[in-house]
Every structure is written in C-alpha cells, then in structure tokens.
Image 1 (cartoon, rainbow, N blue to C red):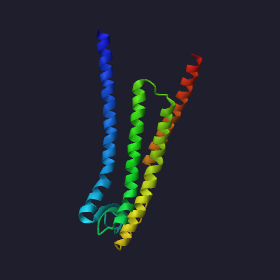
Image 2 (image 1 turned 30 degrees about the vertical axis):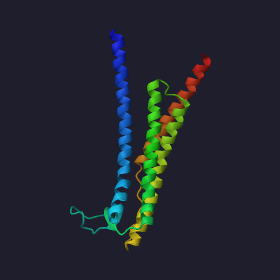
Image 3 (image 1 turned 45 degrees about the horizontal axis):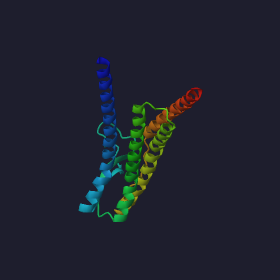
Image 4 (image 1 turned 30 degrees about the horizontal axis):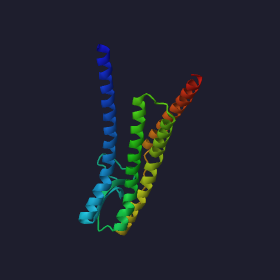
Length: 199
C-alpha cells in the first residue's frame, strides 16, 4: 500500500515537473513575441516604432565617473512616420526569433515527454537536440544582422546614421553545450541499440 502511494506521488511529481518546464518554455516564447507585437501595435496606432541598440555618439565626460574610452553607446530611439515596408523589414528578425523559439519549445517538449516515458536515448531525441543547438547558434546571429540592417534603413530614412552590429557569444556557447549533450545522447543511443541487439 505504501509502495503504491509512493509510486503515485512520484508520478504526480514527475507530471507536475514536466508541466512546469513546458509552461516555462512557452512563457519564454511569449516574452520573445512581446517586442514584435509591441512595435506592430505601436506602428498601427501611431505610425512609429521603438528601435533598440541604436548607436549614439557620447562625449568623453558623459559617464560622469571618468573618461569614456569608447565613443559609442546604444540607445532606444522612438522613430515616427515609419513606412509599412520598413516595418515589415524590421519585423523579419524578431519574427524569425519567435518562430525559432516556438520550434525549440516543441522539440524540447517532445524530448521531455520521451524522458518521462523512459526512452531518453531514442534517435529522435538526438536529432531534436541537434536542431535546438543549431537554432541557438544560428538564429540569434542571423536575426540580429537582419534587425541591424532594418534599423539602419529606418534611421537613414529619418536622416540619421544608425548602423551597428553587436554579437553576444552567450547563444553560441549555449548552442555548443546543447550540441555536446546531443553527442552524449547519440553515444547512449548507440549503446542502447547494441544492448537491444544482444537481447
């Protein structure tokens, strides 16, 4: 009786843990979708967009605590009278990120489902992890480049220079870590296949 109750509690805890993880994944997707939704609504209502990461020249004493070594900083800039073509170009990068986040959330959800079912070394899971690794490594770089081009076009149309490309290696490192995990699961899948062959 006690063993049955313990197993039932463990299954309930595993189910809640999986649901919490999936809910967190879709929360990340929702947060990712917030920026493109915000700029689309703002443009529809007021024909203006908020650009992030716009380069701004700063003076040497601008920091207030010492000499500024670099001559550029990044700012949020509200630009009015943006055309529909420029808005569409601006949305390409964020929409690409949202699509990648949705795809990644679906893949991770299926991966977690297989973990709960006791089949973690299924070949499909290796493929899922490798796709997630590629999404983490490639999409942020590509989306950032497209966003930088769109931002520069909008700033240029407004009569100001605004081209800058910034790269954060965090996503690349995260992708490499997931790729390493995928390799470990690939080795586990091969071992599982050999064991099944012996049986």
